[in-house]
Length: 291
Image (cartoon, rainbow, N blue to C red; front, top):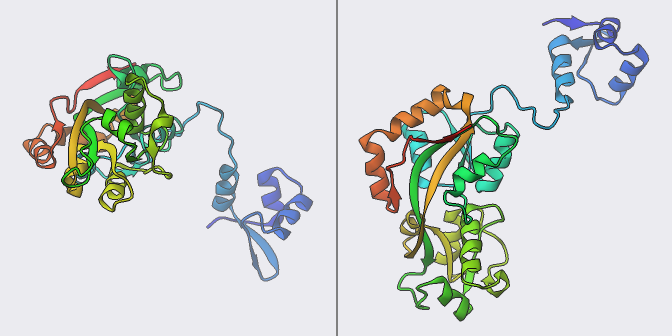
């Protein structure tokens, strides 16, 4: 370990010894007192300086951590494990995942956007000015719909039924793909979100929403067919959506991502999708957009 004296640390950091002693007194700089003298590990001083490094907007780390952020999906989580990719998942919804991708905090974001565009995910990737090197990889198409208690006791067979009945609806956080879909469907119905009898606290993932319905806290909510099946709930289909992985082009060539893409071409991937239900794996592994 390379240890610096007070004078050497002062020269190394280009600050006066008086200022250095002030930082020591306030316990704001890494140091150790040995036989009455303060010593400063050079590598710890380097880390201390870097910890306060300012990052201008648009500057990202050279290599993001091996994490897939964005939307939660059972097939994706299985695939990350099955591929031996070394990628972890951080499920916070589409919007939060994209925000982390832009900040360099995740390697990829799992997204499913909804708006009036012909291909909302492609349009979202194209419209991101800070993602000039974007690549969008198809993962699957998913079926989204109403999750309902077993037996559908309130006979809710459409969003119109939900609006007219005043049924308690579990919702997702702003920026989540399922919440985007709900907003689009409400607008197409010529209604206002204020008409929805919403559960007070948003559910952070599809399984969380399913749990709210299963435990009786809500009468319905929008999530995937796979989430409904896993929770033993009824399902009324509302839409099919593209579920894609958004990343920077250099990340696409990383071994972890390539391991995941190789798995998508295997029969085991299609079999697992069929077991979970509500998936169409035909887009898996395709480059759907790149800048």
